[in-house]
Length: 431
Image (cartoon, rainbow, N blue to C red; front, side):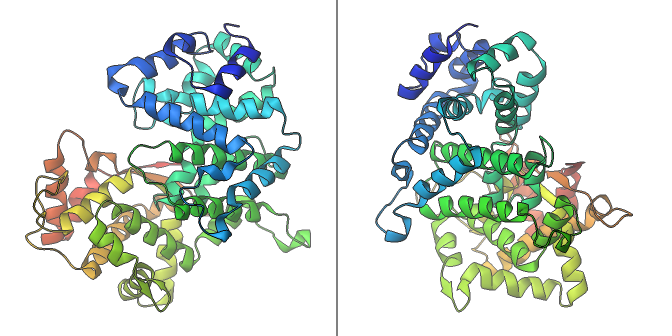
């Protein structure tokens, strides 16, 4: 082994390793490449922030991570979560804390090749490409193979609570992680708790994301929703479905589908203050965005059965990969001409600002076309249905913002040709 467990822990408790120290860790060459390459110029700052956030979460006062501790309701929010996670691990000892610190260090290792889909790259690299390094990694974790396997799941799935919170994903996306080590409920709780805790640290270390208490509460709420779904029914025969069937059915309820669409709209509008504030205005039933989404869904689907079919199909599309990027571009385009000095990513925009009702209707039209196009993939003969992902990355190429603007212009001006063009670049895969 290149570095002793004690030396590695001593470093990670105090600070992020220096570039020359990284090479002493398992897969150190890749870590060094990640932290020193020009392609990942901004990554070192992120990596250091994530490790610092993880050390805060593991410390005596995890609520230091909260951006604002003014309210009594939030005073012990993360402290309570920390204690709950410790219960799911049973013996939360030095080896367990080391697991979380090591996860913070390695979580983005896949970016040594490419930023997009990097969790999958990292997982395959560390699981299959160098058995000797894998042995060293196990030794770094106190010789525990169960922790090495859990680390691999954390690396592969570390962004799933993140995309759930943005509306890009539905609750069934967590089934893969939960079932990775079998159907033992204690293992499932432990996996989901580990992935969620790492995701919180990752969010806290993300440049450009102004983390709010609402963001943290949303992630914790999603984690607890799934933990509740894992609870054995009482009496046991009360639930006849498998876990995956139960989760898909529960997540397909109309209120949760509406919540997902609201999250998409809010996250897409986050960098457009005027629209964001408009969506967050209070209404008789929560936020204005909730009221508008509910009303417009009932306009698009005025009867129960088509509306329920949409909810079910959309839930089975458990990931809109890089969907937030495209929907944020839609919001930017619909905002109309920029004000003096305002920076925009798109080279074109609508001639005048489009109303929020029309913006939401356009988003619903996009989601409706995606679900109808891939409904044959999401449905199965036995009635259980399949989970799929839809790739939206190619709608927003970094080097060709003109393409994104033209697709959205056509969506706005001609609707159906725009939707057809959009779908030509939205491929799907079985999740």
